[in-house]
Length: 288
Image 1 (spheres, rainbow, N blue to C red):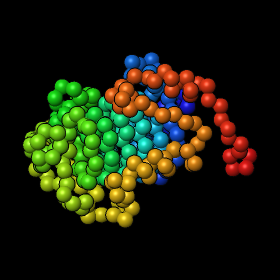
Image 2 (image 1 turned 90 degrees about the horizontal axis):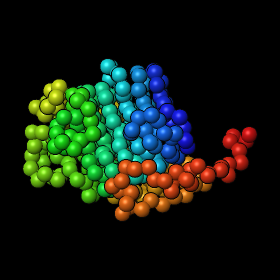
Image 3 (image 1 turned 180 degrees about the vertical axis):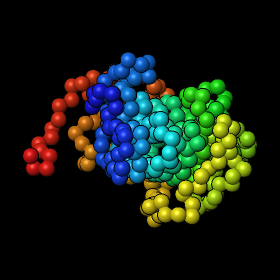
């Protein structure tokens, strides 16, 4: 709570790290207009690799997770069973990396879900997107090219989507399917819709900016997650809302108003008041 700068920052060659069962609330306001809720909640960058973020509860974060900043070499990150609870963006926002994103609960996200740039590849599998405005985006194409995107002018990245549950999205454009919100195949797309988990994305599908194909990091090799590790997508909400965040739900309670908070990216003043007045009931950590 009320952290300066980033909440959790894996910055500069952090390797083999597990970020697990955290509640992450508002940080201290920064100087930029998009830092009213703090800066990054859990960022992975600058050569950090083999990182897993799982079962974390993000409470209305403005910028959940930057995944890559000035990186130039491929690195690997996994996001699973996180609760993006009315958070706004960067779930994650990826540069260069190869990232597996599965069984997360995107719950009322006012800006976007997964965002890819700079030739990154993301395998987005069996997530539940409930009222996430733009579930998947690639820079300068698809939904972003409609003029309402949130990315800079960086080259795009590629997303392979499989078996996700999408509800109340404003725009989702698939490269190769009549599903999504456009109702037609598209040259300018957000993601490739896979019909099988191990499907190889053909190299003919490329980003408009940068002409990058999906690197198929998830096919033909062991990425550490087998089919038996994936929960059924219709069970994701129950599993994540029960188990994400501090164990036994922690000692902070708050209920968002979906009618307002699903579409608002403003700082919730009532929630901030509760955070500022919070005192822990923690008795000990590790016996101390």
